[in-house]
Image (cartoon, rainbow, N blue to C red; front, top):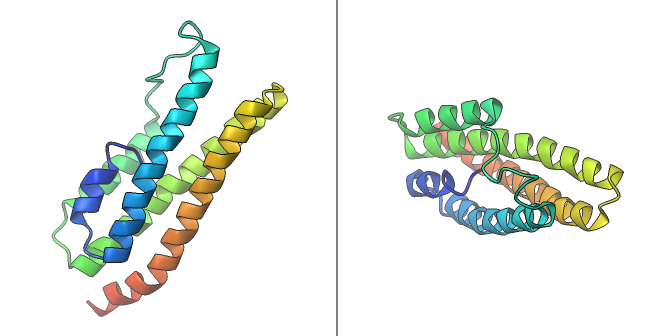
Length: 144
């Protein structure tokens, strides 16, 4: 998830474990942004627009997640929905980081490739953690 979106999500969840996982991922995401900035610094301001183009796919996922947060749902159901939405974001990010890591490799930019690989593995780990949390939280949501 994005640095801007995560704090709002963290406020809404009721599960302590989910809140902790999302808070940890927020801090990890800030470090990931710093890694991207390091790559952008090497490219120079003429080569890259740090704000980038708005990604319609990710924008759609984030809008869907924001709408869900506004729903009147039992806390366990809200937590289960947050996990589902967060995993959609993680899967999108995994695809993106895998792609740019491969581009860095093709360009012979091994330092960039290494930094992007670290981020890719962090995103995969976040997705795995969300799946583990879902196993418990989805059962609670079903009972609610």
